[in-house]
Image (cartoon, rainbow, N blue to C red; front, side):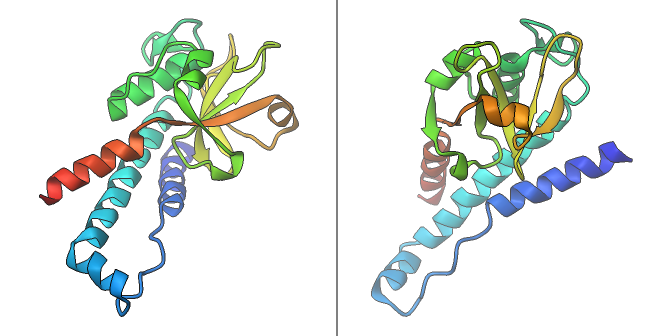
Length: 190
């Protein structure tokens, strides 16, 4: 029962992270211009595309729950380590090729403030006395999914736990994700 309810809860949480912005006042000149040029529809389409991709990523991540940790692993069949999980999920669900190692993933992504975290963003921790030695995927509500260590399996944990709070190194967003979605929406509108 837990495995049926959990994906539904995660998808609903992701949907809330991408809720529609307040409506633009249609009576003002700028609002009319945006509506006339079709920009409001394009923005709605981009927001929906980003939401759909994030939901796909989080849903795929939930599918890895229980997969055993394996150093250097990057498939559900053979096991995964933390950066292998992130790399596999971004590649399989979004077509983004990230570097293999956690510190390389941190360097290849955009730094964001913890308060800006959205489902699908990467969270990094210092677990081996060096920066960015562990990575997970933020899924919303202060939680992340990761492959923790040898002998454990992929699981969801709270970032608010004292262990993770003390070791938090920063949050990152995959570069170009919103830009690629905006380009696709603009091309579709032409």
